[in-house]
Image 1 (cartoon, one colour):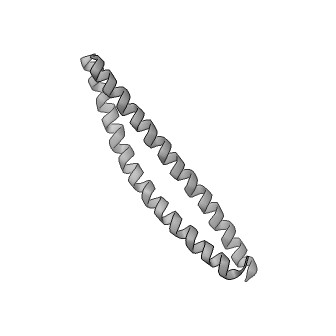
Image 2 (cartoon, rainbow, N blue to C red):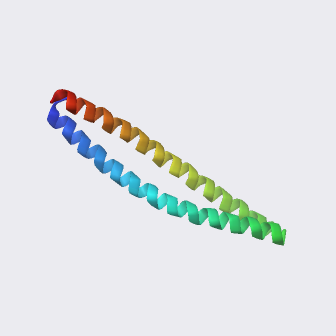
Image 3 (cartoon, rainbow, N blue to C red):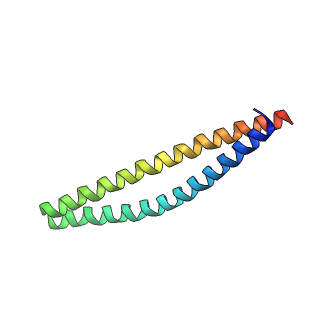
Length: 96
């Protein structure tokens, strides 16, 4: 791979990383909100002991778990792109 191709790929990876880090920040905020909602639903289910409250608690808990999974996927992509960026930087410095 030529130096120009490596630099182009580095720019692409850098843009993707920036976008994913922004998405991670949004996901963290949503995760905090969903955790609060799930905790509130859990307390309501404990206090009221109604089927509807329990259903709402399960729904909030599932939503929270989906968001945790999504956040984990974003984090995995960031780790992968960081490694790719490091490898590209190594190749760039070796070609100079």
